[in-house]
Amino acid sequence: METYSVGNKLVLRLFGRSHDESVGCVLEGLPEGMEIDFEGVSRAMELRKPKDGIGTPRKEPDEVLFEDGVVDGRVVGPVTIRIMNRNRRSSSYDGLDVTPRPGHADLPALFKFKDYDVSGGGQFSARLTAPLVAAGAVAQQYLASKGIRVAAYTRSIGNVRDSKDRGFEEAEGSKAFRTRAADASLDAAMAEEILAAAEDGDSVGGVVGCMVVGLPI
Image (cartoon, rainbow, N blue to C red; front, side, top):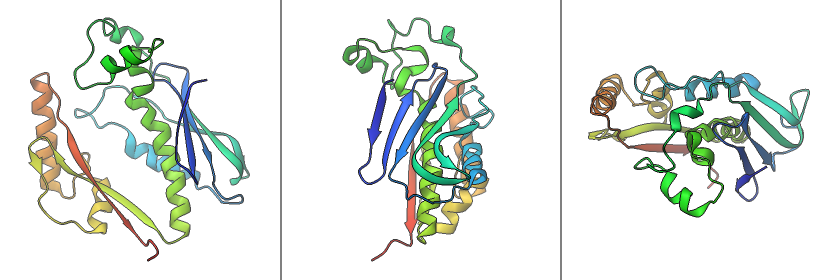
Protein backbone atom coordinates (compact mmCIF):
# COMPACT_ATOMS: atom_id res chain seq x y z
CA MET A 1 0.00 0.00 0.00
CA GLU A 2 1.42 3.37 -1.05
CA THR A 3 1.76 5.88 1.79
CA TYR A 4 2.83 9.49 2.26
CA SER A 5 4.05 10.74 5.62
CA VAL A 6 4.55 14.05 7.39
CA GLY A 7 5.58 15.06 10.90
CA ASN A 8 8.17 14.21 13.52
CA LYS A 9 6.79 13.87 17.05
CA LEU A 10 3.31 13.28 15.66
CA VAL A 11 3.67 11.33 12.43
CA LEU A 12 0.82 11.13 9.92
CA ARG A 13 0.92 8.53 7.14
CA LEU A 14 -1.75 8.83 4.44
CA PHE A 15 -2.84 5.89 2.31
CA GLY A 16 -5.32 5.25 -0.48
CA ARG A 17 -6.46 7.11 -3.57
CA SER A 18 -9.60 8.86 -4.70
CA HIS A 19 -11.07 5.84 -6.48
CA ASP A 20 -9.66 3.08 -4.28
CA GLU A 21 -12.08 1.32 -1.96
CA SER A 22 -10.97 3.61 0.84
CA VAL A 23 -8.61 6.33 2.00
CA GLY A 24 -7.11 6.68 5.43
CA CYS A 25 -4.17 7.41 7.65
CA VAL A 26 -2.08 6.19 10.54
CA LEU A 27 -1.31 8.57 13.41
CA GLU A 28 1.74 7.76 15.52
CA GLY A 29 2.80 9.70 18.60
CA LEU A 30 -0.49 10.28 20.40
CA PRO A 31 -0.19 9.71 24.16
CA GLU A 32 -1.49 6.35 25.34
CA GLY A 33 -4.68 6.71 27.34
CA MET A 34 -5.84 9.82 25.47
CA GLU A 35 -9.62 9.81 25.16
CA ILE A 36 -11.01 10.42 21.67
CA ASP A 37 -14.24 12.34 21.19
CA PHE A 38 -15.76 10.48 18.24
CA GLU A 39 -18.63 12.95 17.94
CA GLY A 40 -16.10 15.77 17.64
CA VAL A 41 -14.43 13.94 14.76
CA SER A 42 -17.82 13.49 13.07
CA ARG A 43 -18.57 17.21 13.43
CA ALA A 44 -15.28 18.04 11.73
CA MET A 45 -16.17 15.71 8.86
CA GLU A 46 -19.54 17.42 8.47
CA LEU A 47 -17.80 20.78 8.14
CA ARG A 48 -15.60 19.34 5.39
CA LYS A 49 -18.55 18.29 3.22
CA PRO A 50 -19.03 20.45 0.09
CA LYS A 51 -21.88 22.93 0.10
CA ASP A 52 -24.50 22.82 -2.65
CA GLY A 53 -23.60 24.91 -5.66
CA ILE A 54 -20.12 26.02 -4.60
CA GLY A 55 -18.24 22.75 -4.20
CA THR A 56 -17.71 19.36 -5.77
CA PRO A 57 -20.92 17.45 -6.57
CA ARG A 58 -19.34 14.29 -5.14
CA LYS A 59 -21.25 13.22 -2.04
CA GLU A 60 -19.76 10.84 0.51
CA PRO A 61 -21.07 9.74 3.92
CA ASP A 62 -17.51 10.02 5.31
CA GLU A 63 -18.02 7.69 8.25
CA VAL A 64 -14.72 7.55 10.12
CA LEU A 65 -13.64 4.05 11.14
CA PHE A 66 -11.03 3.74 13.89
CA GLU A 67 -9.62 0.36 12.86
CA ASP A 68 -6.68 0.05 15.20
CA GLY A 69 -4.99 1.76 18.12
CA VAL A 70 -8.17 2.69 20.01
CA VAL A 71 -9.84 0.53 22.67
CA ASP A 72 -12.89 1.69 24.61
CA GLY A 73 -12.40 5.19 23.24
CA ARG A 74 -8.80 5.53 24.39
CA VAL A 75 -5.52 5.47 22.48
CA VAL A 76 -3.44 2.32 23.00
CA GLY A 77 -0.98 2.69 20.12
CA PRO A 78 -0.67 4.00 16.56
CA VAL A 79 -4.18 4.96 15.44
CA THR A 80 -5.42 3.70 12.07
CA ILE A 81 -8.29 5.65 10.51
CA ARG A 82 -10.16 4.47 7.42
CA ILE A 83 -12.88 6.20 5.37
CA MET A 84 -14.68 4.27 2.62
CA ASN A 85 -15.10 5.72 -0.87
CA ARG A 86 -18.74 5.11 -1.80
CA ASN A 87 -19.14 7.48 -4.75
CA ARG A 88 -16.57 6.43 -7.34
CA ARG A 89 -17.12 7.33 -11.00
CA SER A 90 -13.88 6.66 -12.83
CA SER A 91 -15.48 7.23 -16.25
CA SER A 92 -15.75 10.95 -15.43
CA TYR A 93 -11.96 11.14 -15.74
CA ASP A 94 -11.58 9.46 -19.14
CA GLY A 95 -9.12 11.32 -21.36
CA LEU A 96 -7.19 13.08 -18.61
CA ASP A 97 -4.13 10.97 -19.38
CA VAL A 98 -3.83 12.89 -22.66
CA THR A 99 -5.50 16.16 -21.60
CA PRO A 100 -4.36 17.02 -18.06
CA ARG A 101 -6.38 19.51 -16.07
CA PRO A 102 -4.81 22.98 -15.74
CA GLY A 103 -3.90 23.82 -12.17
CA HIS A 104 -4.02 20.19 -11.05
CA ALA A 105 -1.23 17.71 -10.32
CA ASP A 106 -2.11 15.59 -13.38
CA LEU A 107 0.71 16.72 -15.68
CA PRO A 108 3.68 16.58 -13.26
CA ALA A 109 2.33 13.36 -11.76
CA LEU A 110 2.11 11.71 -15.19
CA PHE A 111 5.77 12.59 -15.78
CA LYS A 112 7.02 11.65 -12.31
CA PHE A 113 5.04 8.50 -11.49
CA LYS A 114 4.83 5.70 -14.03
CA ASP A 115 1.87 4.14 -12.24
CA TYR A 116 -0.03 7.41 -11.72
CA ASP A 117 -3.78 6.85 -11.88
CA VAL A 118 -5.52 9.92 -13.31
CA SER A 119 -8.88 8.58 -12.17
CA GLY A 120 -10.06 11.02 -9.53
CA GLY A 121 -6.64 12.61 -9.29
CA GLY A 122 -5.12 9.53 -7.66
CA GLN A 123 -3.09 10.30 -4.56
CA PHE A 124 -3.33 14.04 -5.29
CA SER A 125 -7.11 14.16 -5.12
CA ALA A 126 -8.92 16.44 -2.71
CA ARG A 127 -10.45 13.18 -1.45
CA LEU A 128 -7.26 12.71 0.58
CA THR A 129 -8.28 15.70 2.68
CA ALA A 130 -10.91 13.44 4.30
CA PRO A 131 -8.40 11.49 6.43
CA LEU A 132 -6.45 14.72 6.96
CA VAL A 133 -9.54 16.33 8.51
CA ALA A 134 -10.20 13.28 10.69
CA ALA A 135 -6.59 13.20 11.88
CA GLY A 136 -6.64 16.96 12.41
CA ALA A 137 -9.73 16.67 14.58
CA VAL A 138 -7.95 14.13 16.79
CA ALA A 139 -4.83 16.33 16.96
CA GLN A 140 -6.97 19.35 17.91
CA GLN A 141 -8.48 17.36 20.77
CA TYR A 142 -5.00 16.67 22.12
CA LEU A 143 -4.05 20.34 21.79
CA ALA A 144 -7.28 21.38 23.51
CA SER A 145 -6.33 19.22 26.50
CA LYS A 146 -3.24 21.46 26.80
CA GLY A 147 -5.27 24.67 26.52
CA ILE A 148 -4.34 25.26 22.87
CA ARG A 149 -7.08 26.20 20.41
CA VAL A 150 -6.96 26.42 16.62
CA ALA A 151 -9.36 28.14 14.20
CA ALA A 152 -9.29 29.09 10.53
CA TYR A 153 -11.35 31.19 8.16
CA THR A 154 -11.38 32.26 4.50
CA ARG A 155 -9.50 35.50 3.89
CA SER A 156 -10.11 35.68 0.16
CA ILE A 157 -11.72 33.92 -2.77
CA GLY A 158 -10.86 35.25 -6.21
CA ASN A 159 -11.13 39.03 -6.09
CA VAL A 160 -13.18 39.10 -2.88
CA ARG A 161 -10.90 39.85 0.06
CA ASP A 162 -11.44 40.29 3.78
CA SER A 163 -9.49 43.44 4.67
CA LYS A 164 -10.24 43.32 8.41
CA ASP A 165 -8.01 42.00 11.17
CA ARG A 166 -10.08 39.19 12.63
CA GLY A 167 -10.03 37.86 16.17
CA PHE A 168 -10.07 34.23 17.22
CA GLU A 169 -13.80 34.10 17.94
CA GLU A 170 -14.56 35.53 14.50
CA ALA A 171 -12.40 32.86 12.90
CA GLU A 172 -14.15 30.20 14.96
CA GLY A 173 -17.53 31.65 14.02
CA SER A 174 -16.80 31.26 10.30
CA LYS A 175 -18.03 27.67 10.61
CA ALA A 176 -21.55 29.10 10.39
CA PHE A 177 -21.00 30.21 6.77
CA ARG A 178 -20.69 27.94 3.76
CA THR A 179 -17.58 29.70 2.40
CA ARG A 180 -16.08 29.94 5.92
CA ALA A 181 -15.97 33.73 5.60
CA ALA A 182 -15.83 35.73 8.82
CA ASP A 183 -19.18 37.47 8.28
CA ALA A 184 -22.41 37.11 6.31
CA SER A 185 -21.76 39.83 3.71
CA LEU A 186 -18.38 38.39 2.76
CA ASP A 187 -19.86 34.91 2.68
CA ALA A 188 -22.44 36.04 0.11
CA ALA A 189 -19.83 37.85 -1.99
CA MET A 190 -17.44 34.90 -1.95
CA ALA A 191 -20.19 32.47 -2.91
CA GLU A 192 -21.13 34.73 -5.82
CA GLU A 193 -17.49 34.82 -6.92
CA ILE A 194 -17.41 31.02 -7.02
CA LEU A 195 -20.70 30.76 -8.90
CA ALA A 196 -19.63 33.37 -11.47
CA ALA A 197 -16.42 31.46 -12.18
CA ALA A 198 -18.34 28.20 -12.51
CA GLU A 199 -20.72 29.85 -14.95
CA ASP A 200 -17.69 30.69 -17.12
CA GLY A 201 -16.36 27.14 -16.84
CA ASP A 202 -13.54 28.39 -14.64
CA SER A 203 -12.46 28.18 -11.01
CA VAL A 204 -10.95 30.53 -8.43
CA GLY A 205 -8.34 30.21 -5.73
CA GLY A 206 -8.36 31.56 -2.22
CA VAL A 207 -6.41 32.32 0.93
CA VAL A 208 -7.06 30.83 4.37
CA GLY A 209 -6.12 32.49 7.64
CA CYS A 210 -5.30 30.29 10.64
CA MET A 211 -4.99 31.28 14.31
CA VAL A 212 -3.60 29.38 17.28
CA VAL A 213 -4.10 30.60 20.84
CA GLY A 214 -2.82 29.22 24.12
CA LEU A 215 0.68 28.27 23.02
CA PRO A 216 3.27 28.41 25.81
CA ILE A 217 5.62 31.39 25.74
